[in-house]
Image (cartoon, rainbow, N blue to C red; front, side, top):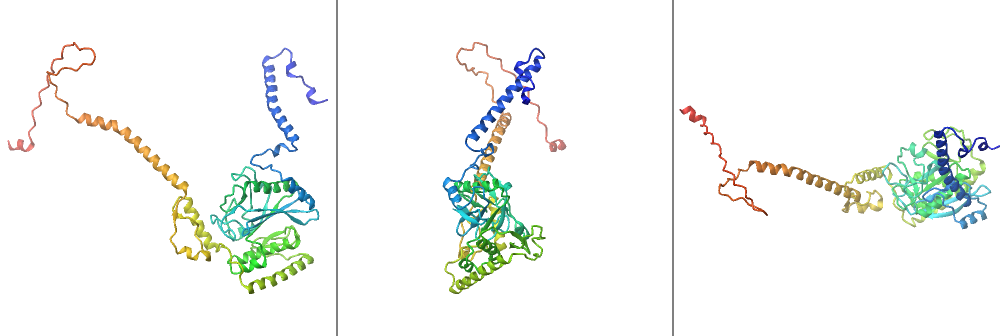
Amino acid sequence: MHACAVGKDPRDLGPGNDTDNKLKQLAMKLSTRILVPLALTAFLAACQGSSVEDIVPNGASTQLPAKMIESMKSKGISLTAPVMFRIFKEENVLEVWKRKDNGRYDMVTSYQICKWSGKLGPKFIEGDRQAPEGFYAVRPAQMNPKSSYYLSFNTGFPNALDRSLGRTGANLMVHGSCSSSGCYSMTDAQVAQIYAFARDAFKGGQDSIQLEAFPFRMTAANMARYKDDPNYAFWKNLKEGYDHFEITKVPPKVDVCEKKYVFNHTSDPNAPIAATSACPPSDQPDSLKMAYQSYQSTYDSAFSSMVSKGRVQPPARSIQGIAEAKIIADWSSRRARGERVTMDPPSLSPQDKDKASKPQVMVRLASAVAADKAKEEREAAKRTRMSKVQLPSASMSVASNAPAPAVSAQATPQTTGAIDTAPAAAPVEQPAAAPAKKAWWKIIGN
């Protein structure tokens, strides 16, 4: 027997307490009004093959194109298989890789990055406008379906390495709206698909998505171009992780020790690895060591060849260490306060050496100019109100100090409309003036 069959329907209640009966009938009506819309919503969701939790704003429930899903199936990739993202700044590309049935990853698609701020190189401090570089972990809690930038997820900056190096900053995102100040910005249509890849992978059980952000593709030609860059040592460390993925096509296990990244260093999840401590002994399998050595040998030969030939393509601008980061952070602070600053952030890049000696156009944020204008208008309105309040008292003061006009006994009263027949008032006698007092020197003289 169902539990609902045990009691009686409130509509069938016999004589008794009328108040109780009315309360029960009211409860029945309220429950009907609440449950019917919920049931209807669940019914509609079921008809569409989705759940109530999928009915969310801002395109967070966007599904991947059917053609893309079919392409993944042909490669042995399921919709909810684990995913990995790779970003290349100089090439303006975000790649999406997913795991195949054999455990190795294959690139599913790529997107042209709409905007990323700053230059090549890592983020150093809050306000330097740099988009981060490195290896980051994206977890479900970092996904934001209600972002002010359509959809977004937090990159996870700062990670253990960033913190060990004293790097600061927060809320560095991959998001939509195609506008960036330290983030990687995509179009809304692009970020909807990227968000869908992450959402589906989390539904499949993936607990953390690896996000790899590089300054450029870590080829021998590019490394030769940037061999004299102040960020070169950091980029060589990133290249180790890049190489591990290129060899195995599996996202590397990333740890931090001795203030640097180490990749596939140990398979022991409980190994004592700390960002600022010495690295423990490595237990990499021999097969991986041999593959990495062979890959590195080929790379070294290609790198030497590129260096001997000279630079084929000039390097792009890169941030010149913490010194430039501090200058830009100061510029950002002054700009945010509404002060007049140069149109572009200051630069220490060699490419901008001549630009620094030329006069710069000073500008202010439009919001700061508007705020000043609004303040001036408020103050002007306040002055106007104050003058209106003070005007009557000032007129009264002038009137009280003015001499009374002389009254003529022969004056004829003015009339308007009907003639005034009342007798004229008799002239009023003015009291005699008091005798003037003598000056004190005259009194003394008497």
